[in-house]
Image (cartoon, rainbow, N blue to C red; front, side, top):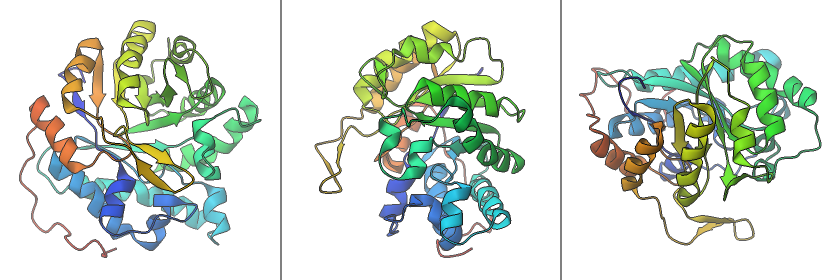
Length: 306
């Protein structure tokens, strides 16, 4: 980030669906850590080849409780968390350039699989949220990612809990809220939300993800002004999810050209979230001058391979 803007990947779930994967399970893409790890590695590899310099792991919806409901004990669940990092590392090794791995730590609401990550305010205290996130963060940190991505955070209570627990692991982190307008999804002012990261040396970037691209513009400026830190920004395509029909509506509004305004406002980590695929990441790579290097020898091509 000191040398320039770093390119993140795009939405993992949409790439997995493009590969023919069924993500209707409550574990979402995390189910494939057990049932289809080759598919996850293939999805990561698609983004590396598009030019991504950071891969975000398939652990967003993973939890010990969720894995337990599918019959996995604590040791097996911990191994699945570690596998999420290992698969991203393997994909990162498929090109002859530096690619970093960000371990995704999704919000409590993602694990409940009922859309609560877009509401926040779960009725849990900060201390209760700490107890939920601690074993997840410890398992991911033990696998050795380059950074923890505390992402799609809907409210300040959960951000406070995540920052406290992540601060114990010794890894750098980025904190990224999901927002609507100028507020968190729980309705708190973004200034209040971003202020939680002020003075925390372990927080290397602050920003937003999983939001409308138009909402990202102002949020980037606010994050930079409040914290003085580099900003991370990776919004959705702009399409809308219809929970009734369980499908996407409207057209995509993600314009790769927005990256110039984001950079000017302080963004140093940029990419895409839901419905932003490898083609769009390749467009961002071209704008940022990121060159996709040659593939290494002997890389896996079969997405069914373990």
